[in-house]
Length: 226
Image (cartoon, rainbow, N blue to C red):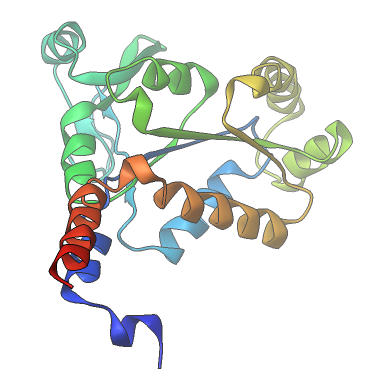
């Protein structure tokens, strides 16, 4: 018999009342952030991946709401001005950002939202109105030589592009101390296991269980009724 077999209605309701969190993953290119993000999504289908909004035009095969939320520039700027964008940046003449409303809806449903973003986007979200719900994780490579090897192992980029990514990596890594957790991705399986451990612990934090106060009150009433 497991704990779930003997759970009371009160404890079952408590388990369902958890407040969702915002999980930010950042790393230099090649350190494994995107691979870990995909594994997290496969591990927990309820995890919501943050879909970015953009002012650029859709490309062939892209679908609004699935790949991006495609917004006219004026609407995007209005969302930024009203605080409806958790973070944003301009890249090659187009704006990209994370809309606030879908994240808040997921949080209210007890679902976590996963962000695969750089340190600048992470900093903006931590400084937003939802900053207290953020759990940020920075992924480091085991060495710079290994980072270079992984980038070359992709077989997708020219020497010029690889050099540019390596140069940017130093600036990215300099922000490691701004994160709640730092994981060295020396072994994918071990790193993923550590990531799951910290996520599960963060989900159980007292302040992410708004039903706990009422649950404890119920326990006290049971004492009084004895």
